[in-house]
Length: 264
Image (cartoon, rainbow, N blue to C red):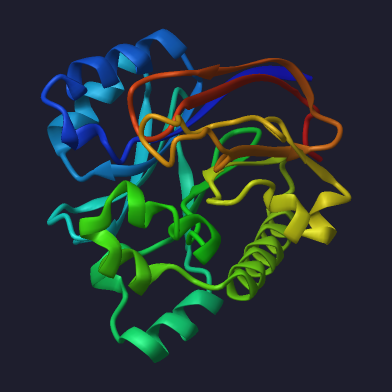
């Protein structure tokens, strides 16, 4: 078995604060992860280089997801940074919400696109991504950010559509783990309390390290903390320790030290 530290963090609010870059990089350094999955990361080559240097990473892969982040004119995407070389990047775009949203709203890619990204390391497959929020989570945001109500209404999907999306993601993860015979770890902003509740096949073989934990602060959201992010690992993986690093951003940073059974 080998032990790695993996972290995940949706940093979509980094751009909103002048002190964000310095504080953001200090948190990257503090965590000291071997693998860091970032969602809603601004497309900024200088920032990428700073993350590499600050975190001591050797390689990274960035996927541009949106050119207009819910009304903000920013190029943002998902990224995986690693202290090992990255190979075989695979991009996945869940099908179900796009069918619904395109039917009702036209081109949703200009609004707030969602993708999942997988990369292969020497001994593991790492997945990061950002799921569509459902109406259940969007409705309270109308009070939190009333000026964005129109945009939220446009890109949120129904509970039924989101359940279908998670099954879609589940099937992709199963196919991925079957084609690459290495342990698969998915560290992402799933935008749901417990993604495995909607992934019945995957739930038989995986668990969420942060199941039942609150990963988003009340200050930045609806007046209460709630779950949105998680790290899904094979059942045989041992969680040595885990931590939710609270901060002033839109999401907390999560990391875990995992003892992983070697792949075949």
